Amino acid sequence: MKRYWRLLTYLRPYLWPRFALAVACMLGFSAIDIALPLLTKFACDYVFDHVLDLAALRHMSWQQLEQLGTPERLQHLRGALPWAVVGVLLASFLRGGFDFGASYLTDWVGQRVMTDLRNQLTAHMQRLDLAFFNRRRAGQIVSRVTADVALVRGLVTDAVTSIFEDFARLIGLVAMAVYFDWFLALVAVCLFPVAALPLRYFSSQLRQASRRMQEGIGRLNALLHENVQGNRVVKAFGQERWEQRRFVEHNERLFRIYMRLSLFRSLPITEVLAALAVGGILYYGGLRVAKDPRALGSFAAFIFALYMLYGPFRRLVRTNYTIQQGLAGAERVFELLDTAPQVVDRPGAVELRAVREAIEFHDVSFAYDPGEPVLRDIELSIPVGQVVALVGMSGGGKSTLADLIPRFYDVTAGRITIDGRDIRDLTLASLRAHIAVVTQFTFLFNDTVRNNIAYGDPHRSKDQIEAAARAANAHDFIVEMPRGYETGIGDLGVRLSGGQRQRLAIARALLKNAPILILDEATSALDTESEGLVQEALERLMANRTTLVVAHRLSTIRRADRIVVLVRGAIVESGTHDELLTRGAEYRKLYELQFRDVESLEGGTGEGVPARKAAR
Image (cartoon, rainbow, N blue to C red; front, side, top):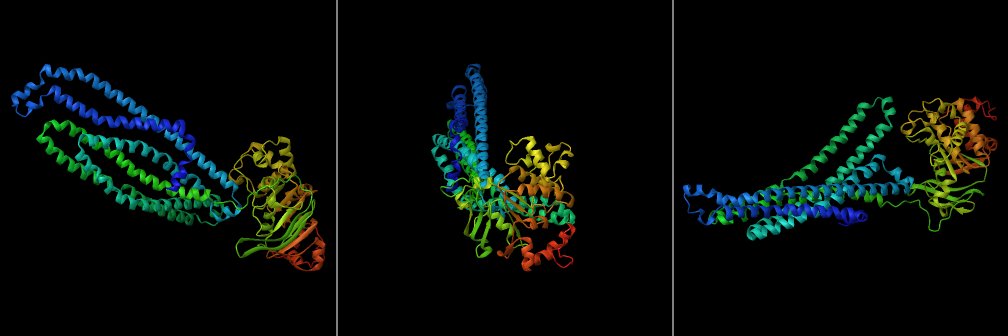
């Protein structure tokens, strides 16, 4: 119940006036329904009291019964009919109006609660660190924001509606049934606790099945997300049938879980109990009416009330199913909301106004998982305005080291400083505002070329955007597109080539004009023709800026002020390109393995390295 009360807090801002009016409409709707048995009793009693003489009815012959419909006796009925018709029409209009008001207002409140919850979820997700997203599949996260929140909406609004409307109707009808015949009402009410026993068992089963259902939907969404994003790879390897089999397996598993849910929801508990109650009551009531015909009005009204009692009772039972499904969704929603971000602003964090001194790593170690260090005892200084390149074999920790500067992750041990201040004492927003990042994994949004270049700063002028595109050697191919800078590029820039996507990412970094630049394989997707122009742009961008370059093309590495070699998460040597080649240690090995044939294509001398084909 703690989760349910927590969910009701999302309802609080809308209690007045909309939800209060919705409740008033529900109660009005219920009141009219409750009044119908009373009208039935009144009609029966009126007919028998004013049209038929029940006292003499049992002793009359058939000839005498034919005289019951005399004009004098029927005159009472004719006078009452117009009022009865007006009453029925008025009750129907009021009932319809109350039903409309309750439905519309509760839908508005429910949709508003769902919108607020989704807004809060996405806002919280923006604060979560990269480690959270690395541990979870995208489709499962999306499922929590969409499918799970939809279930929670039903819990907050549908359940509350049923409690107010059906429970009020149930209480009123039970009270009326007691008024008509307390003994028969007691027999009917005694069946309620009997119905509660199986419901208690099935509630826990239903919640477990609902949670498995939502988890299954999350896995299915994740599978679809992978299939759509990786469709090129699927087709390249001819694995369409394999992917279809994977989807069918997940979908069939989801079908079985759903049918288990349907089994719990469809069990005819209320129907069986209602049949037993009605059968016994009809038998007992029929005997009473046979003995005393005057009891017919009360008995008819009681049966009508009992019939109407079945509807709200059945809906309350089904509301329990809605509550259990909603609680299963709420568990997953609150699990996400309660996930605390690991990278946050410290109390008293200050803004970074400018970068005037070096970026320094002081005995920094880092591990994604405890006991498995990726970086060990890093001591490194990147002076202002200098270019420092990181090289090493794949998996050596180069990209991880670069990710620590904008605090995509926090260090496990040691500290990183800018201008002598621990970056954890700086606000995240101000720190990242001073850093531009271009990685080998170019991410572009399903938007126009212009908006992708100006991402994060939509107020940039047309001239500024085009200047950045020219500097990144992207302007020429952009103007050849159907709508130029207003052309949509599709999901992840699927309508562009790899080199074009990378150049847009570089243009985005150029436009940001940040004092700290991180290039992680930034030119890896560029062709030879465009690399020269882009390299010139990068060199202009790196001028007077503090730049960290993860090894990619030799032309950038060779011109770096300092090259740092990482091996298994530790710095083993550093120096200029020429110094490191002369030493003949790790850098020379890397050069021979990775760089020599690139330099020969660029017209280099080989720096005294024996001419042999480099391994790739």
